Every structure is written in structure tokens, then in C-alpha cells.
Amino acid sequence: MTHSVLLAEDDRPIRTALERALTLEGYQVTAVADGIQALAAAHRERPDVILLDVMMPGIDGLQVCQVLRAEQDRTPILMLTARVETADRIAGLDAGADDYVVKPFEVEEVFARLRALLRRTTAGSAGAEDGGGPGTGPDGADEPGEAGGGAEAGGAYEARVADSGVVEAADLRIDGPSRRAWRGERELELTRTEFELLELLARNTGIVLDHSTIYDRIWGYDFGPGSKNLAVYVGYLRRKVDVPGSRPLIHTVRGVGYVLRED
Image 1 (cartoon, rainbow, N blue to C red):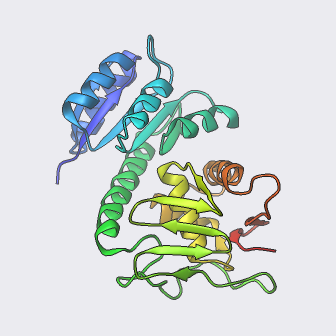
Image 2 (cartoon, rainbow, N blue to C red):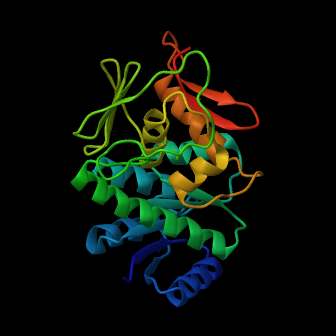
């Protein structure tokens, strides 16, 4: 199946090189040079995935992302950025991006991240039909042996998974088919990646998931021990889930990974 990619990059050599590489990889590519053209192309062509540079003249990549998300456009977006600070990455995630890659980059990494986003989109569509989700079998129940660690002693408890695909853990409620989540009465505003990460942790409540397991289940690709991708996403997810005054649910197990549990 040929997937369509909207590429928005104002640097002409980078845009030309990426357009050629993506075409050779089998993608149908629409390449534009600024944010205004990117929005027009997104509205006109409805691509399968968007590759969006952050720094562009006029309307930048963050603004393009914000506009599309405000229009309820859920097309997966991979941001290209020369900014390496955590705050800059968080700004992209907050705007609604699904993933990012830092310049200078290897084109193979861009390909890997695009494939992961497209797989997740396909899996999400299938899950909405059968009530499944990350870490689930065909009946919506947890598959054994998926987690990357053992159950933690003390504070561990089971997630409740309804036939409808709703997961409940502590005061969390996650509706997989509608891709909505609540903590208590408060609905959480989550990006695609944040939602899938929270759902994965909730479905494996009380079980430590190692870094490679999470990378494989969420991104479909292990970015290696030097990557800060996962730490950035977990940190931002905590800001939304573990607000001041509530009991923290997302815990770091140093040197191993992360676990959702109520201590």
C-alpha cells in the first residue's frame, strides 16, 4: 500500500533530499516550503502522515500543528527540529505532534519513525473496531508475557478492562475506542502518543515495563539507551496525570523503566 506524505520544510536542500528519499522509499510525496502551503495542502489532500519542520517563515510548524489539531485533524505528525532543549520538544508535543526527530538526522531514522506512526494509525483504527488497544489480545484482555518486568510488591493492583475497551486503574478511566481518558472527574487532554503510553501503562498496572518494551509497543522501534524520547514523553504525561494534590501514579524504576501503580 502506498502512503501519502506531506513534507513541509523551508530549507530547500533538505526538502529536496527528503522528497527524493521518501519517493524512492515508495511514498507519495507532496513537498511545500512554508506553513501556509502546508495547511492548504493538508486541507486539500488529506495525507496519511505529515513531516513538519518547526522553523518556517510566516506560520511555523508549531502553529500548523495547533491549527490542524484545533480542526480535529488527527493525521499523525512527525516534527523536524533543530532545537534540542527539552522545553522545545515539549512545545512540539503540546502543540499536538506525535513524535519528533532532531536535526541533523539520518534519513533511516525518519523512515523508522514514519513507519511506526503509520502502524499505530492502522492499529488504532483496528482497535476502535474491535475494542482492543496496546497490550491487548483479540478479546480486549491483557496478553500474558507482554510486560518487560515483574509485578512490584506492595502498591500493585489490577487494572479492570471492560468488554467495551474501557480500562480502569485507581481513579483513572481510559476509553480506548473513543481515545479519551479521565482522572477522577477531570478529562485529560492527551496527544496520540501520550494516550497510547498511558493506556499501555494502565493495562499493565503494577508491572514494570522496561524501556525497550515501551519503545517497541508505542513507537515500534527502539531508539537505544542514549535516547531521551521516552523520558520526555513520560515527564509530560506526568504533568497532566499526576497533578499537585493527587497521588502519583506513574513511577520510575531507575535503570529499568516505568510502572503505573498507586503507592
